Amino acid sequence: MATYKIAVLGGDGIGREVTPQAQKILEVVGKATGASFEFEPALIGGAAIDATGEPLPEATLRLCEQSDAILFGAVGGPKWDDAPQERRPERGLLGLRKELDLFANLRPATCFPMLVDASPLKRSVVEGTDLMVIRELTGGLYFGEPRGREEFADGGARAINTMTYSSREIERVARAAFDVAMKRRKRLTSVDKANVLIVSQLWREVVTRVAKDYPEVQLDHVLVDNCAMALVQKPTQFDTIVTENTFGDILSDEAAILAGSMGMLPSASLGGKVGLYEPVHGTAPDIAGKGIANPIAAILSAGMLLRYSLDRGADAARVDAAVLRVLEQGYRTRDVHEEGMRLVGTGEMGDLIANEVRRSY
Ligand code: IPM
Ligand code: MN
Image: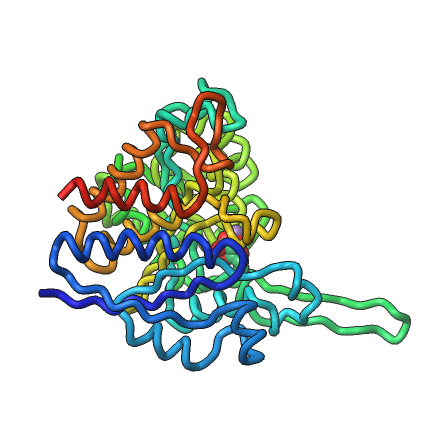
């Protein structure tokens, strides 16, 4: 029977609360199928800074490299807000993405029918939304050189970040996006700012070239400002979206609202040898420690882990279906709660979904 080693990096804030729920789901899958999951916890982010002085300790990186997949929570929080860039919790996550070469970040945004009214947007707008943002994750402004800050004698200063992309970096994420689009509705929207940025012109050129290898996919190029508008105006026109790092960071948060709540959005970071699976929502310091966070994004991320890293699509489908069934039964965490629904906490939601997964076998 298969044995899988999973690195568990809960991190900070609600990351530490939702990750155990995702782990619980994988344990149920293991029990039901005979597959054996070995979970290895490790420090990352603020928790790692407090314990070791480093946001990404060497031991954590080594563990991740030797694992079959990484279950990730979230990093950051007010406690570390004043730290210099290189010593912030976020560096831990950015370092992992870079070290493990996780250049393709898949962020699906689906509006589940029973959550249509949980979105602050109108039913007529969000109903039927089912899209996938593919965000380039190891290039662009986040990592470009030169970067830095210089202080002037007169008290002023200058700070620099650089948006750079090589054709190779664009091509590999474009191929990943076309591959995903082929398994969906075969429509790909490439988002850039080619009317202003030289980098975007190269982006457009390379994506157009790669498209020749995917004649069945219908490719469109859209400017990022226009895409931001279209996402809240008519999200159902989108299928698969591919874009560079910073644009993808912004657009995927916007897309989260189409799914009702940030608490619903899973993600997979792929490309290198080991995939990383992470809810998109972040640490949510305002609700951390209260046991009220929505574990569904983390649980759906565990589903993506089964699908993309372990090639267990049938088990992943059971996890997705279990989430839907629990929502259908009217259970809601606070972020998506409406009148007449049954309000539950993080652990209870995790248990309900785990039970449904168990029953499905
Ligand atoms: C995300 C987050 C990260 C990012 C932060 C925590 C570094 O916002 O995964 O979207 O900006 O990529
Ligand atoms: Mn973000």
